Image 1 (cartoon, rainbow, N blue to C red):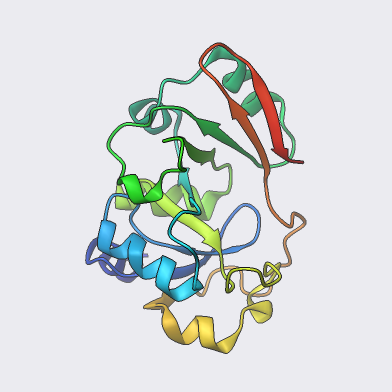
Image 2: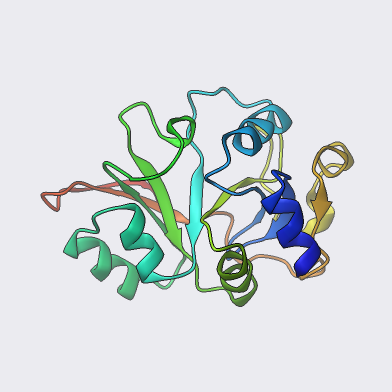
Amino acid sequence: MEPIIEILKSGGTILYPTDTIWGIGCDATNIEAVNKIFDIKKREKNKSMIILVESEKRLQDLVDVPEMAWEIIDLSEKPVTIVYENPKGLPKELLAEDGSIGIRLVKNDFCKKLITKLNKPLVSTSANFSGDKSPLKFSDISSEIISLVDYAVEEDRDKVSKYSGSSVIKIWGDNRIKVLRE
């Protein structure tokens, strides 16, 4: 785990298993690393990326969490990313055009440990080029993507994800809800 943390702390990018698909990640507070991921994915800068957090405290440090969000997080069986308004302490490059950000509170042990040791939120975007199919297992990731990141995690390479992504739900401060992806 330590080599992965050192790479992330020095602005590097990693391929890693999440609670859904394999992702490309970096320290979400490091703008150079975030921009590297946009370049790797050949992704337009106006398309936001989500971040992962490991604890309710870290989530609350980044956003005001509406009561409805807690209910959805508690009741959801599938991983759920919630889009929040007015995040604090994150690079504007990570945010959507309206200033919101998608954040997922992970339940997967590997991700929890990784984020806890890094002590920062982690960018999570599918380990593919923009527009290509998302990788459910490590062997689905193109060799070109693997060559472009600084490190590919060894953990769970044989595991096949049962989710092709998380549900994405936008919640406004007044508890209005919109399902963006089921």
